[in-house]
Image (cartoon, rainbow, N blue to C red; front, side, top):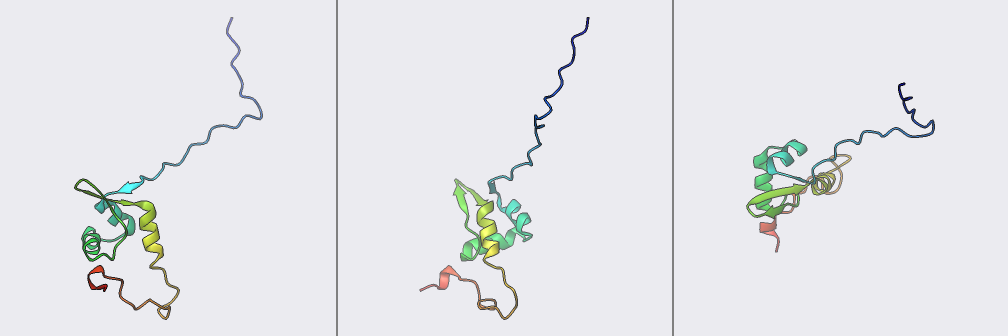
Length: 96
């Protein structure tokens, strides 16, 4: 005699597949790809102080995805006549 297969309860919800969670920290190359910039651009902006916030873990430079999004959002404009559009980004070397 074979056992009767169990049927799922009618009001039970089937588990849904969770989308993969983004990594909380990206390397310089991954961050550049994320922002569609060259890795060298991020390196220069790190030296000049005009790039996104970064973290140092030993020798490794890492970027939080949230910081990349915040930095990109701060460069959002509606038109070329928006205040601050044509102003150069702050350069920490020239701040007095």
